[in-house]
Length: 257
Length: 326
Image 1 (cartoon, rainbow over the protein chains, first blue to last red):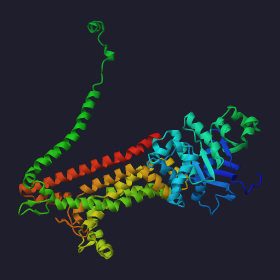
Image 2: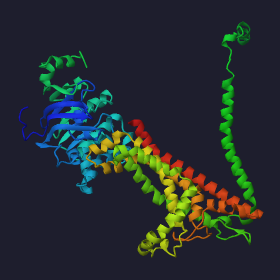
Image 3: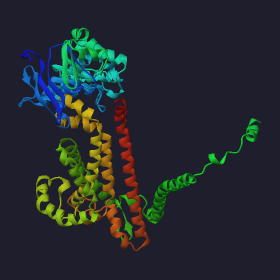
Image 4: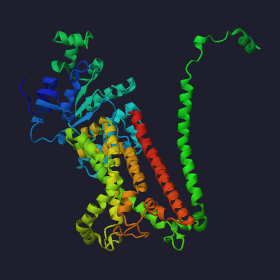
């Protein structure tokens, strides 16, 4: 393990994530450089979603879940004794596999939800922040005339972009995307992928995907996980064109997984 | 004439293809009859109530609903105090029971240590199994003395200036009735709300938590709104039970035909009046008046249930679309 650069935004250090006594992620040390997209790939059940959920302390919400090792956010271990998980999640936003708009709220209120729990933002600035977030999620033009209608009337792809807007509205440092296009059609998928390129100028993005082409298209760095272990990580271009390990190559060429 | 030719050409069905099982049509007949019998019974019940209430209706007209006089000696009857008492005691019960039951449901689904959840939920639901008359006894010997000694004096001191807490507290009162009812309906509201909250998808909870909501904010902003139709249904179920409850209420409410704003005063409910006065109803008009009270209680209960359905249905539409899209 190379010494962790203190200016680096996000890193894991021998992170092990467990459910009861079963380790789903084993001793993973990874660096997530600022303003880049890092893809985590691997076959189903390899622990990639669990790894992602460790990065904003969502993992511990599951029954019997715990971790060892460290996750460093600007050099601070987010599992340290003084750190509040709620505050971590305000700085590390998350978008889930399936769109999860709040069905009883309007489009506006959905995006404002994260700003309101935060409570620091004066009400007068909420409208500006909502518009900015919807602009960033490339949804503003589609919904600006119906901000106060129900969020569930949107299409699946729009709902997912709404969730991205909701996640970026409180201006987190990191954005975690957990297979964000798994339930979308090709057009919706493409919009989200284009969005990743836009969003990385402002945020550090970690995306979990089972789609290798997607990883190749959107990411700067790729980490390949298998059975909870980090097999290989590096620049996406290098990893996909000349993987160092036989196992990585086998997965990338579709011979297993 | 094609049909005729087909008919003549087609051979009779062989025995192997004929229906052998006579059980199915029989079974179908039986369940159809049973299914029709229940609504029919309801209609007969309403008709019976209406027919028996006729003499009182003809005598007092709409005034029966607004008059406060209930004088069997003079044969003058008015049900306003009982209608008032039924509604007020039930609403009082809801005011006390809803926060309590929702608190129990939220605690048991979101905050309680996992191993305590099932046993505590079971104990809460066990409250529903206690016979009504036992609640009444408990009300007389435990609740009322407690209210008299510990609860009412500070209440009067703090809120005595409002019309709601005026007058002398003798024990049997609207307040005691409302509290007994509240305890009786808490298990229903809590049990149904718990099921509703458990049915809220984990993704909704996680979405809120992922935004940096605290556990409580996640419950308040994501879980409860999602389950709102079901929770309203649970409350209405509790209200329906409170309106019709008889025994425990009549033991503590005071049974006086009076309309008073103060919850410290005794009152009466329709169900309690029917139960208490049926054996004393010696004249036809007296009996008829009690039948009319029964009819009104029936109509109010049906109306509350219909309203509940409507409310649930209207609120559910938003969520239903949501759950389909998710």
